[in-house]
Length: 384
Image (cartoon, rainbow, N blue to C red; front, side, top):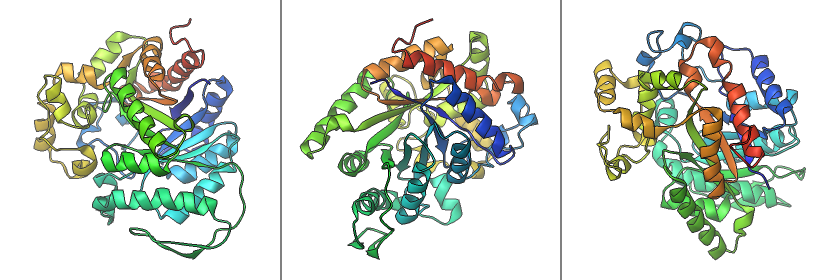
């Protein structure tokens, strides 16, 4: 079975929804893309001070990076125009109730001829704290989400279930069933991994941020498969998904120039390695303190100019180089294939380079991503 390929649909509220449908149809018509990946974001990763024409030509045409479209509403609109694509939506366990999320995913599943998948993480401070939610409740809410999703799907009559934050009392959502939407756990840590192998259909993480080498990823896959088997679950009926933080372009000099820019260097600082101590293990000094993790600490809207400059000053060229999968479509596909060989069943190349390109060149990002998918589908990433 070939790997499932997914391309990110990076949405905003400045563009008409029809523009995203056009992108989806182009991906579908290629025959090499299985799914769209849509991020459920409230606030982006970059401080607003960095989004200026000085740092990116795109800032002259896109007023900000924080005006995200609602991932679920936009997915419904796009699937109506491209039903032969599946959709994977990444979200957190905090901001939507499990019954509501279950209903939404059942609905989206009726709109696609493939799979509708929701990837649920424990949450990010930047998504929750400013809007009145407690990120610290994330793991308890994630358990509620995963267990409730399974309980409601299996329910043949009204059910009761005790939860950490959400409990069911004679809950019933009807008997309509079709293809089952999938629910995956997103992230890492002992408790999240335990919840994922107990109740989810798959798990997803990011490369190189979590797994800088295919061997490191394979070791994790082997451990998770062993955990699944101990729990009486079929390891071969479980997905291992990877997002690749990438920079893709046919001109190496374009990538090198982007690596010198603050937008690319900022992501290397906060997410090049999600655990700061991992940098030290690789012989590099971390740009942020021990124990700092973007999910719990990053509040980009609140950062001052001096705080931003202090972080960027600690980012080295070598750190940027190691933070991304980068190169031509062929080179990136070859690297992604090594992770497929190590056990990845689902991949999405999240190319950040279009954010810092001229608008005309940025529009070619989807074409380059489709080319990566073509090579992966061929099973020979280096094929012509």
